[in-house]
Every structure is written in C-alpha cells, then in structure tokens.
Amino acid sequence: MTISMKVQTMELTNDPTLKAARNKILDAALALAADDGWTQKVFDRAITDSKIDAPLAQRATPNGPVSLIDAFHGRADAAMEKSQAETELSPTKIRDRIALAVRLRLLAMEPHRDAARRAMVVQFLPDNLGRSLAGLYRTADAIWYAIGDTSSDFSFYTKRALVGGVYASTAVVWLSDSSDEFEDTWAFLDRRIADALKLGGLRRRLEAGFKSNLEGPLGRWPVPRGIRLLWHQSTGR
Image (cartoon, rainbow, N blue to C red):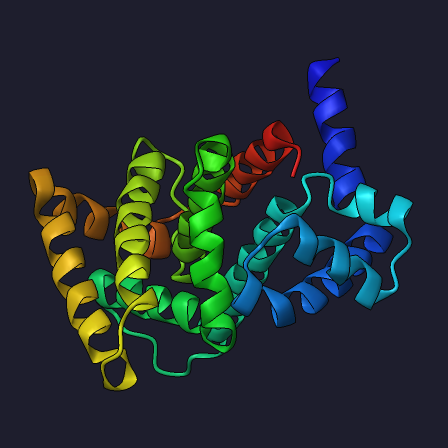
C-alpha cells in the first residue's frame, strides 16, 4: 500500500499538465528571483505573471518556492545530460569525464547564476536540508549516467557520494567566481576530483568499475535507473 501511494504521488507530480504549469511559473520566477530571492512574494507574483490559476499552481508547486528551486535544478540536470550526450569528443579518463559533466551542470545555470546563488540560501535553511540533499543525490546520479556509468554493485552509492561532494563544493566556488571564464572554479574542480579519487584507492575501483560497465559481457545494465525511480517515488518527486 505504501509503495502504491508513493507511485501515485510521483505520477501526479509528473503529470504533463502540472509539469507545464510548473515550468511556466518557474520561467516567471527566474526573472524575479535574481534580484528578490526565492520568496513567497516572488512565488505569488510568478503565479500571477504566468497566468496560472491558483488551484493548479498549488498542485504543480505544493512546496511553494522550494518546489520551483527543485524544478530549476531538475531543468539544469536535464540540460547537462543533453549537452553531455551531444559532446563529440568525450574524454576517456574517468576524472576528465566527471570534470566535464560537472562543468556542463554548472554552466547550465549560468543564464540564471544570480537566481542560483539566491536558491542556495534557501536550500541551506534547516527545514529544507532534506530536500536539498535529495536534490544533490539526483544531480550526482544524473552526472554518473551522463558519463556512461550504469553500475549496480556496492559502488553505486559510493560513487554518488563522491560526485555529490565534488559538485556541491565546486558549486559554492563557482557562484562567487569572478575570474575569466571561471578558470578559478575549473582549477578548484580538478584539484577536488584528484583529492576525492585518492581516498582509500577509490580511483582504482571507480576506473575498474567504469571499464567493466562499458565492456562487460552483459553490456550496460538498466538496473540503476530502477533504483533511481524508487528514490524519486520515495520522495514523491
């Protein structure tokens, strides 16, 4: 019964009508949040500007501004995956693949960098930490799939913890970076990945697992996508 209820919640959230309404509200909010933050006032004005009626807006964004922040990061995740798929000369080394995906994920937010900075303030509030961690997991998960990893062994969550830490710390640097073409951020990212992959010989395990997933006799397994689906269902998003 519990699983069934979670599935229904997810289906409701991903209903095309609700997604369309949420995207319209998000577009309107992004024009305001850069200056005024992700406040209730901005949320209410975005609903008015998007011409979405209040009952539909409530269903599409049940957590108000926080729902819009979730949608904003979900949109950036999708843009990163699309950009990664369109990259003609993808790096072969695992560290370089991770670095490229993190770069693409951050650059997906560049048109709305001020809004992203304001969003981080809201995400750090105690009441929002749980949802923020779930969102960070989804971003790390999207990065691994974007670079071609479909592992389903013990390293599945270890990898996401690794990339989640790298992405989160790099995002903080990027949001305040004033260097040309974010060169300071990319230098920090390279150092962060190098340090992370050294921990406990993790680099060797990741590279071995990545090679196995690409070249193994069973090919690319779809199992983790199922795990990700269960995670989304368990959070109702």
